[in-house]
Length: 79
View 1 (cartoon, rainbow, N blue to C red):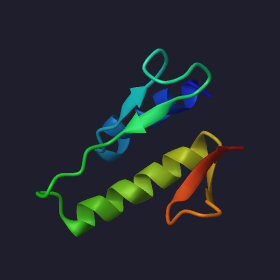
View 2: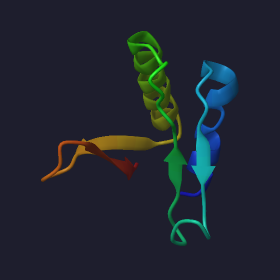
View 3: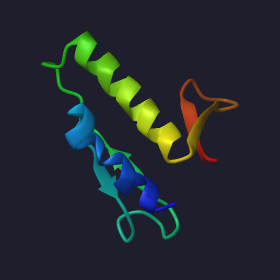
View 4: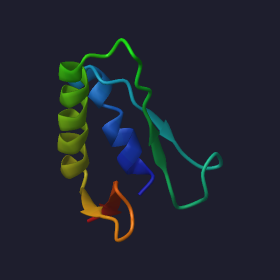
């Protein structure tokens, strides 16, 4: 799983989305995270493009998104 965030970092060059991979020891061993920062200066179009690019990259590396049972936000699951 830790290699998936590194693969998603390629978004920087392919889609112009700045994504930082967060890996152990910053997060628990066997897990990883992506860090993105949204700013007030981002337009709706830019945010929609970033969401689409992240979804494409996630599918490319085998990560799917399922609705969380008791949450308003989707939960990423490794395929």
